[in-house]
Each structure stands twice: as C-alpha cells, then as structure tokens.
Amino acid sequence: NKKIVIAIDGHSSCGKSTVAKQLAQQLGYIYLDSGAMYRAVTLFALRNKLASNGTVDEQALISRLAEIKIEFRVNATTKQNETYLNGENVEEEIRQLPVANHVSPVATIREVRAEMVKQQQLMGQEKGIVMDGRDIGTVVFPNAELKIFMTASPEVRAQRRYDELTAKGQQVSFEEILNNVEERDRIDSSREVSPLKQADDALILDNSHLTREEQLQWAITKAQERI
Ligand code: C5P
Image 1 (cartoon, rainbow, N blue to C red):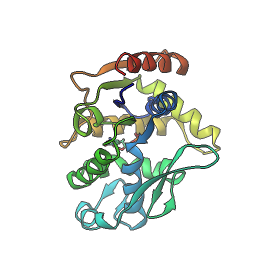
Image 2 (image 1 turned 90 degrees about the vertical axis):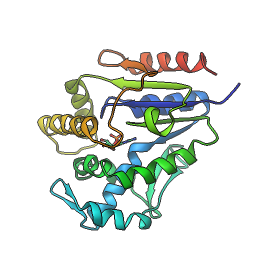
Image 3 (image 1 turned 120 degrees about the horizontal axis):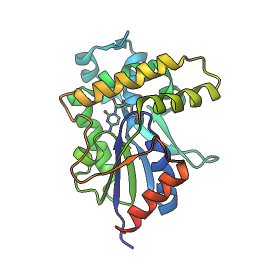
Image 4 (image 1 turned 90 degrees about the horizontal axis):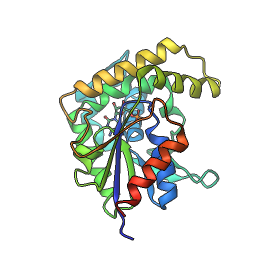
C-alpha cells in the first residue's frame, strides 16, 4: 500500500474536520487541522492586544511571528491531536467566538500564511496525512493524490455549529452564528492571498443532506481507489 496525501478544503463549519479525523483514523493516517494553526495565531494576537473589535494590527503581528510556536500533541485519553501555543494547551480557547471573529482577517495576512504553509508542508512530507483547511489542495499540497471540496448551505452549517456550542453550554444565538459563518465565507473567498476556491481536480462533497456515516463511506471509497 502506498501512502497518499488527502486534502480536504471547503467552507466554514461544514464538518470537514469530522470527516478528516475519521478518515485518518480508518486509514491509520495522521490528521492535521490547519485551521487550528490560524486560530492559534489569532489567539496570540488577541492576548497581546494586536487584535480587537474585528481588526488586526497586521504590522505588529508580522513583527512578532517568530515568537509564535504552534504544535500538535496527542491527548493520551482521547487519542486526538490538541493544539499548543508556546507550550500551552489552547484547544478549547481557539474554538470560542473571540477567536472565530478575528481569525479570517488574521488569515488574510500574507506573511502569516507563508509561515503556516511552510510548517504544514513539513508535516506532510512523509505522506500518510489528511489535512483540512481552505487552501490545502490549491496551495499547500497541489499534488495531493485526493482532493475533496466540502460544502453545505450556510443555514445547515450554522445550525450544526449552534448545536455543537449549545451542547457545550455556551450562550450563543443562531443569528450570531449564521452571521459569523457568512462573514467568514465572504472574507475567505474574496481575500487576495490563497482565497478559498475549489481546486480544478477536487471532488465536490455537498453534505447538506448526508449523514456522517454516508460522508465517511464516500471518502473512504475515494481514498481506497487511490491507495
Ligand atoms: O477550519 P477553521 O474554521 O477552524 O479555520 C478557521 C479560519 O482559518 C478560517 O475561517 C479561515 O479564515 C482560516 N483558514 C485559512 N486557511 C486554512 C485553514 C483555515 O485561511 N488552510
């Protein structure tokens, strides 16, 4: 069996990470969440007052990029990768709204992207990896053997994110979540550097009306055809 690279891109909150994680587990591959890296940079910016009220001090953040060390470590109990920022586990904090509300402007910064892409390419060197994000099939691994572009309607995506956050006991409104999903789509698709777009050779997976199991089976089939 040869090892391949699987790139999963698509819109915010359409379940990329769920499919990517389960697919990696099935294949015995590494799963890497590239969005977590942009989120960790954003958390650094918020904590250091380089971002607030939806805006980011780009020059200040660029000048401090060298201070940011992002790693993934496996949680011994859950066996899942967790995100570390300068040695601290920030997995929970990077999923919350302050980070979600500032991550897209941070991810438009060319220097930030260059650094993240470099690190992601290193992590994929040995293949046997499933990476999800926005530019994995277009920029990070243009030669990936399997590229999947996932999408679902904004309302379906907002509802899923809403259910997820309220299940964790967070106080959020559906409207607020829908606005965040639509705003991130808009910024991610219209930015100058590596905009979110489907790679020419990507397979589309619209999961608005598919169960998790159906999506996973579809992805496993596509992967097995290439291994
Ligand atoms: O995947 P997730 O929603 O956690 O990503 C958070 C944000 O990080 C996205 O909205 C996008 O702005 C940015 N991102 C990106 N490129 C990637 C992954 C994420 O620009 N490869």
